[in-house]
Image 1: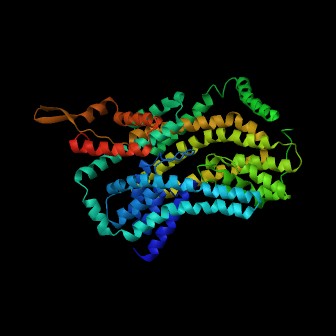
Image 2: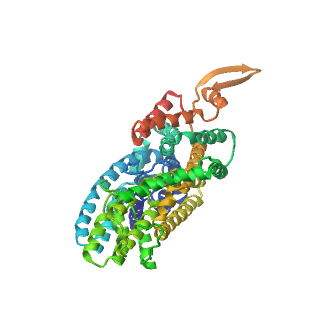
Image 3: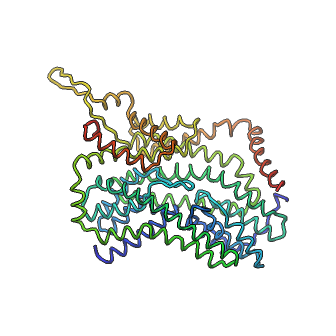
Length: 268
Length: 278
């Protein structure tokens, strides 16, 4: 790997690290993180394919509230390097990515605990109305998150040689790699289950089963299924008695909570 | 307090734009103690600088916003806008209690998370990511590009429009948000999200049990029936569905996702070794 590539690896993994905490631009998702990493390492096609593969596995990995999920950021950057530099198969990439995702999760928890320091420092600056310092503390906390991903990734890029990767992965017995490939097919269910639990509304679950049955028998593209789902959603909202009929009743039910709210304010 | 009285906007275009930029870094100082507290404080800086000229006023305003806050990042706009509008009204001598500002802020967190999480993480992202991944698996760069562009255009739109809505509507926003609109959006997103999850569970989970149940030879042709053949005849994807439901149950029982992933890894290796999974 050239020095220039190593600098790019460092910069990109820093952006991925920031993305993993911000959750805005989605640079920490495998689909983007692996693809750009592959581009830097000179194998954009392999990067994209690995990104797509890991994206499906990580589809439901999300941080809701303060709960932490496995870390897609570190898993993406390191697995792409090892797969491309070590000339490994996509399947082996999955085998690398999952343990790294677990390690990344531990690092995330540490980083987000450490940033409490920035929060406390800001209390002191608030007392002085020092705007610049408050802003600086807020934005500089990102450096912790950038380093969380870029330091381990760059270390791997610098110190791991293709021979090392090949020796380590070739020494894995066939049972393990074959088993990992098999497991890769159904590990996705953990991510699906995370999304389903977050969205779980008992009376809407028939829509989940409808999607399941239809996709078992209909050979439609995902885009087509998306359109069907969107139409179903629109029709359902239009027909839902909660919203449609008895406009008077529903609006009075709606304002009941409003008045509660404003009553609270008045009491305050 | 007259709720419908329009507050005179004191923010310049530059102030609003700066608030918008800040709101794109909502989780920069994410910490387990107060989550987005420092972020919200920073979001308020352009407003505080503009409307409070006395140092004591600035300090008390900063203090009350450096407190616990947590909303799905894409949906933080309305709260930031509304809080800014309230601070502006207060600085203009309107009779607004500090506790009113705080209770509105806290009161909006629940409903906005309630709509933000299913819309962003349950519907928009999984659908676009799954779509992008299908293209990516064929080696196409359109996959990541489409995912990145569409997701971010929608996200920036929600953020900008939400902020403007909070600023312009002020108190009437609370009525608007607690009305039917958010409920409709949440319900619609949930229907779409659940439907697509059902599709994905079947389409993209691969479990194959090649265990032979019977072997019959008829007219010199040997027909092998495996467990998988029987299950597929009942309904394609039954095992995937069962496994997903089991994972949902275990996650609800607070088993950590990463532990489940490693257990499934173990199951894969074991199943492959004995020959019941392929």
